[in-house]
Length: 329
Image (cartoon, rainbow, N blue to C red):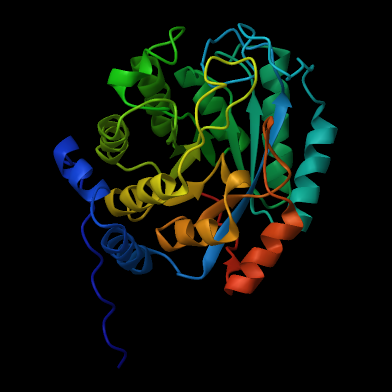
C-alpha cells in the first residue's frame, strides 16, 4: 500500500503586520529556503505557468494612478487607441497558445466597466479565449455584482484587480478611487465564483511596512487570492513616478518569498519589471516561490522580455510550462 501523502500546512488568515515585517527582513537565504520549502509542499517545483497579457483598450483612462502611462491626466508616450475587435483579440490568444501560454488576460484602461457594446465585446472575447482551451482573465477596472456574474457566465476564470500598496500609502499614488472601492470589486468577483488575482507594486516610495500591510490585507482574505502578481515599478516618462530609482532585485525576491509564505497555495506571479532583471535574478525569484511569468513582448504598455529568451531561460533551468487548469464547473 502506498504511504499516505504528508498533510499540507494549514493556511492562515490572521497575519499581523509585525509578523510579516519580521518575515520579510529575515536573512535572505533563510527567507528563500522557508519560501521554497512551502512552495514544494503545494506546487510542482519545476513548473511555471506562462501567461500573456493584452491591452484590448489602451489609454484615455480618467484615473490618476501615479505609475500609469495610460492615465489621461499625464502626457506619456502611450497613445490612446480604440478598443480592439473581437477577432484580432482571439487571433492574439491563438498565437499566445501556440507560443506556450496557458492563461490569456485582457486589459482595458477603464475606471469601471460600463454596460453596453464595449462590455458585450469583452464578453465575446472571453468566450472566444475559452473556446481555445485557455484560462481567461480580465482586468477592466471596477465591477458591479451583475457585471461580475455576466463575466462568470461568459466563462471568465480570473479577474485581476490589484491593491497596488497598503491602505495607508494608497492615497499618495491614487486619488480618483478609494481602497474600499478596490476591495469591493474583489468581493463582487469572489461572490460571482470567479477566482481572484490581486497583488501590488513595489518601488513607488512606500516603506517595508507598507509592503507588509498590503500582503497582510491579501493574506487575510478568506480564501486567499488564487493569483498574486508582484510587480516592480517601471517608471514611464510623463508620469509622477518617472524619476523613481530602479527596484533592487533583492527587494523583489523578498516580496515574492514573503507572499509565498503567507499564501502558499496561491500562484505568485513575477510580473512587471522583469525586463530589467538578469537571468540569475529571475531564477532567484522562482526559487523564492514565483511560479508564473507573463510571456510576450509587452505587459499592457510596458516592455517584457523576449519570448525566445524566456523559453531559453526555462529550458536552461530545467523548468517546464504548467498545463492549463481544468475549467471550473
